[in-house]
Length: 366
Image (cartoon, rainbow, N blue to C red):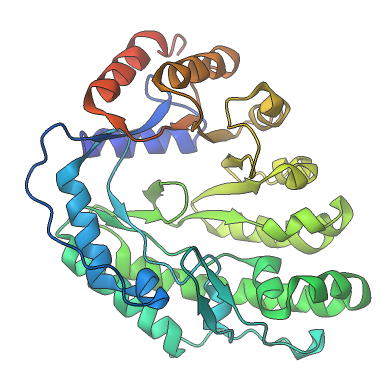
């Protein structure tokens, strides 16, 4: 693995998942190399929107070019994402992908709630193609980067992709039993799909990475979510989604929940009741201040009180602001179970940032 210290990175992740640390917070620091290790190979622009997302040859070349031009420092590690959009489980269950330059949508394929039938077929053409592309990327990696498990997503997010968000809102009221049956079927389809990806992508030392938010670990590792929860009441979330998430976390060895935007905060208390959930990743939402803002402290207070780790992205301001932001968060929450993702910076800035962290953000208790 081309990064500063792969063995230590794995140890630091183990500690973070346990809401602890080796000596300081986890840091994802990627730097533009002052002197590239070689000349990047030319990469032709994708001919179609589909190729933008699924041209494995181009994505592999781009990943290897980044190894030449960027340095992965602290707990940063090189990885490759190859997704049929976020929520590709919907495609393996019957939707068709609609490729766009910035994302992938999925066709609605259910006319009525009772028509839902989610049976994972490993011979589904989209699944077969996706697994083949990921295996191709894995074979080409030569151990230099991780190929991540794709962002397949789960529970009612998949139902809403296949049924449509507006219809799903109606179904929660008019057809609650059908929705619950559908979520059960999605739960049953998730791990047969997940495990095939994991078996193909696990590293020689037993590590897997998950696409979203740069997390890795041994065993089954995943980011979990319910973005549709922004449209749900707390009672609906507890009834339809919480049991599914709890079941998923019991099977996963390492799980981080992606809490997406202010409209999802109302479900935080329910999430903190999932004993097996280890960490929470906060996404502030469009037009909102980044994770360093005191506006979000009430979220972090509740997460830390529940004994879970935090995954926070700092993206506003300049280099000095990034240090001050992390300083403030460390002062308030300590160093255990904290993971900061930073913008790409120069090598000089990266060295200074890590040196500052090593001097000022040290664990002071056993």
